[in-house]
Length: 72
Image (cartoon, rainbow, N blue to C red; front, side, top):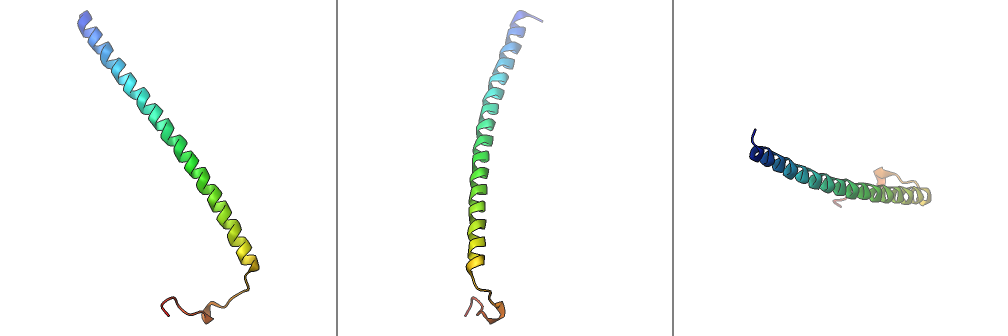
């Protein structure tokens, strides 16, 4: 193999490595943002569950057969 061919192959490998590093960094940022979103949604869900439980404990029991359907 000539030195020109080796240099060309080495340059191509370096380019691929740079793209791979950039892709890895972008994927890490995406995973980090998704984890933040998951944690935010978990907090909101916990808050909503707490509100639902407090509403249920304060609400009087109701008979669904006596309630009007939504179209009335």
